[in-house]
Length: 564
Image (tube, rainbow, N blue to C red; front, side):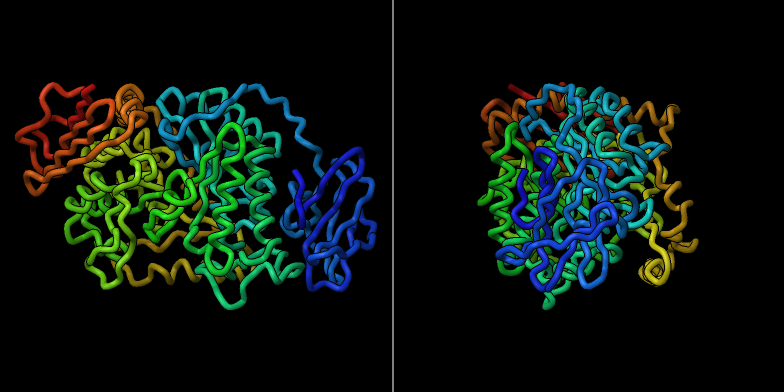
């Protein structure tokens, strides 16, 4: 893979080192401790072709300051130290993998450090057959690009081409992907292209033109996508993970912050380059704008649908603070909209004055990724509470079943399939003034919420990280949840996926009583119907259903039926 502006390109014992530093007057390559001047080329890219071997360490020196390669594939240590020359892919891939169609996706979101006690790629690899046996068809890895320290969510990454060393080596990550493919699972990587973390983003030193000084994101300086070198950096990064690591797709974090001149063109170019790969790769976005454009005009496969989550969460917990306020007026009515159209907020008047979204109900159900829990919605709570600790367990179980059998793409947050109650809390490993600021900021964020009780967990404490690991219980409740997940996903595979493949014709969601919803989707290949009780027994559940969750006379129940 060739980079126009960035990275190390190998061939026949020679390496071409590249760095885009348009404002620099001199750049040196420090290879194994020996500085060598680099040559300035057109467009502000500095290059040097020299003999180098895999395992050699290198830095770039600009203005007397040594820095790692922003597009380096491996670090010798932390984010401030030398980068390492790596060999072309020599991993012994075992899976003859040809990918999977997107309409078969059932996603399992996981954080590598918390998914297992060991918190490594190797340990996660051993759990792939477990997920496949339950009926999952894809895993989504929270960001694995290197970030400062040992532990963190990954969204403060600063070296997006390099796997985080606390999780293992590049070959360990390839082993995880290979194990997933052998089990029949796609692997989707969460990639952050909208900002860099606050510690170790050396691009500010080498390439200040990478950023737009006139605009800030909530997490730091915005990125200037009008620059050819910037677009090349991110397209190359995407290709790196998809080709070198054989990932099946990318989830792009907060694309609403990829904005300004050049942003739309970049998103189109990225989709074109990714979809040209064989087997076909998938692109999922997080986009709070609720607009159909990327899916409709550029071929992006799907977007996270937080509207569905918010309606479910408010219906079960009654919470109405912050962004839940818009969904607290009539959460069950909102859920009906989500089941019928995908998004709830489509530009119509809502409780808040600000209107959000555009009509998206014409899109395929497979363009919406629904969830009842995610790392964001759990971890951004003060104490990282999971839904099962906040609401009636039977109600949560019924909503879990609804998520898995409805004709939208379901995503489960790790542990949800087995009724996990351990929290998932915000944690990081910053030090010095930055660490103190993060600790202070996290406490201040929730200082005004009287119901918190205990103090907000210290995000820098290893105990916070340890509390966030899955418990892997094997008791009766865990087995009941696993049985529910297995039954629902078996139904989905047998009935829902074939209907999705045939094409949706129409949807009809009614509300016969305040806490009852009846839904029917008509496809070319048949119909899918469900009856959902959300706080009162259903007097008219579906007759002869294929599947039911909860007793018909219980306040929370779901019956589902598929007809050819």
